[in-house]
Image (tube, protein in one colour):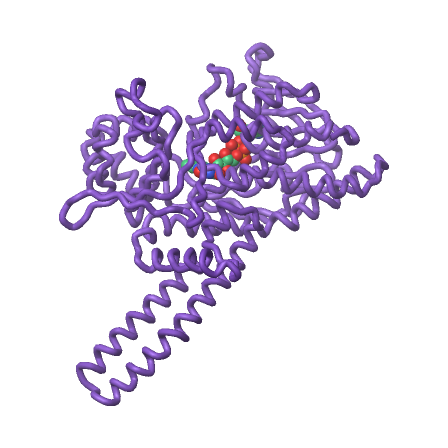
Length: 512
Ligand code: FAD
């Protein structure tokens, strides 16, 4: 689609920046991508997993954004390298000491989320950009300053070949029509944007660190069938819920699993303090039974001691733009904790929504290029207005889902509610009921709408329960109390008390 040519600069060549560059390049703009690090396709570049999780859960919103990138090969590629995960596999130990696995499907309609290697996806996006004549990469360029009134930006260049021997770096100045900041949670674009826009900003470090581990493929995997190279089911996201912490595993194409330990800083400090490492397998045996048979105790210790222990940050801000010059997307706008598997998905969805809105306003300019900037300013204001409530909603849902993953998955109330909502979605489709998880992961409704509908479902459910079951119990209990005032009355009161406790937990769980 050839439109009026603008110089669009994208800061950050992560998955979100790369997709944004693809969208901009498809519209015929001159696109320049500036990335702090080297080209990740170059083996000498610091691997992404040094600071990032390797495997991610990709779901409908991310896929939908890629479908709209006007690159059919991209979606074909993605579908070819992903592993469907149809549900959670909960691992635990029964009171008699026996280990168990319990599968909980994500969706009654059989839909799956997809495990994907973040690096592979990112490299594929870079390959596609490389083929476009209107795209130029600037690796080893760190954004250090920006003036969004004069549309100028400054970069520190760290390319070995251009080192200034005196200070081992040099600075360049560029100008641009439009900047898209996709430079991650510690965004420099956002930092400079704050000097121009009246930005509200809120940042929270939660009391949880994460560290990655690997479950190796089966030793004989080369000769075995595709499925048997995995040591546990490849079609599930495995969870060892530990109430206050948890361990998860996501499959990779080579038969391995990328695992993550999420635990409070105090637990990490205790384990780090033991230099012999003996307490690490003991800790796993106590809270994550079965893991030491998948990762040998010595490997567990060495992986814990050599892999970084990283914090989790949640960022909310608004607005996301200034004038017609700049907008922030992805983690730069709304870094979130990873417990809904939506961080990258939401970032990719930002790109689709941003360009939908830009296209809509672009059509309104009726090919009068003098209106371009003012129309873009209106479009960016609309983007901030639409996207801020949705990004805030998914940030909150992601924080709440930590409790669901590490503990609620074991609760009968949680399972009962999920089953009832799914039953209604199948047998009374006219009600339009779906679980919150399905709406977030298998649909493209606005996140704020998901929250609204899910709260409504919860209220209807509780009202029906209280009306249909609670009231008769209350009346019956009171009758028994007055009739016998003794043992039976107290028992009836106990039943009623427990029932109301369950209802309260249902409401509380839904609102947290
Ligand atoms: P990034 O991936 O952070 O990329 C930003 C880029 O900008 C980087 O390449 C960086 O080098 C560059 N940059 C930074 N500063 C500058 C500068 N000054 N100048 C130039 N370039 C710069 N999301 C999901 O959807 N599903 C999941 O299952 C999932 N699991 C996760 C598990 C963990 C443990 C974590 C921590 C996150 C997880 N996420 C998940 C979130 C996901 O990783 C992020 O949301 C996603 O990577 C954000 O992409 P991005 O392109 O916005 O930012």
